[in-house]
Image (cartoon, rainbow, N blue to C red; front, side, top):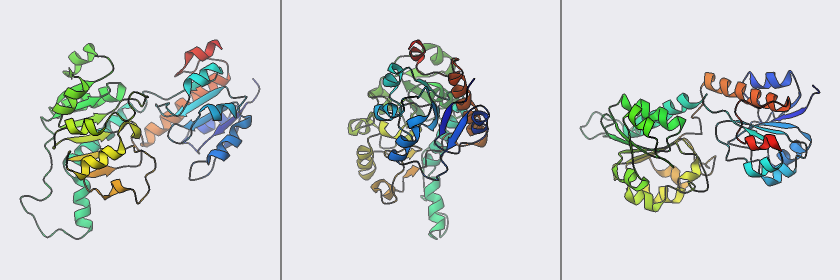
Length: 327
């Protein structure tokens, strides 16, 4: 098999880069910030495959047209909303992702956010670092109870299911909304299907794990916040644009919810002067839901296996668009 040209948009964790470099000619972006759009379009002009982050590189029609030899887009991540999949499919380009390997890590992270927001951990840390602590009082940083509370999960895919399993350990009463009911999981996990409006009105904690699609973009709107309890806490480990950022700002400003905890934002990254950062009851982390050494290594390996299979004329282990194989 002749060597192909592959672009890695970051110096990804091992072993993926080494696996690809052992078989093909590899170019790696060494910057500590994402490539500019112009640089990315220039660099993909002569490549056969790209190994990219779904959080930073956009493979839309313009980018795909700029890469006439492109045969595979291998995403480092489970999401693929950064790719125009129908257009890639029409061009016979295989689109791959890394599902499964980050499920448990991201579910752990969702629960870390839930607990931190409920018990106001970041506020407590700031309270001490700002030298405001003068002693114990009965009303200091009183938070929300987790044990026995009602959890609503928006999107019952792999990560949502893993979150529901964790909720059982906290004796939570769990409901979910998904595009279609999943009766087998309802029995296994002792959870209940609700309409989105019902879930928003009943839940003490609302955890977003649904994929970003045209239908879910802006799903958590002013109307959605108006349905929530004032004691509700919103957690988002999916994609930033699912939550209307302006609606979130209004909800926090007017006390429509108790708190929010986000691993993803719109846009990413947020600027240091973003108005959302004024709220002490908003916990924001920099999209690190899968950021453990073991998980990132497994993601890297799987992304490399997807890419190598595609360039070898084989079906990748995790192919988003099998229709492209028939092109």
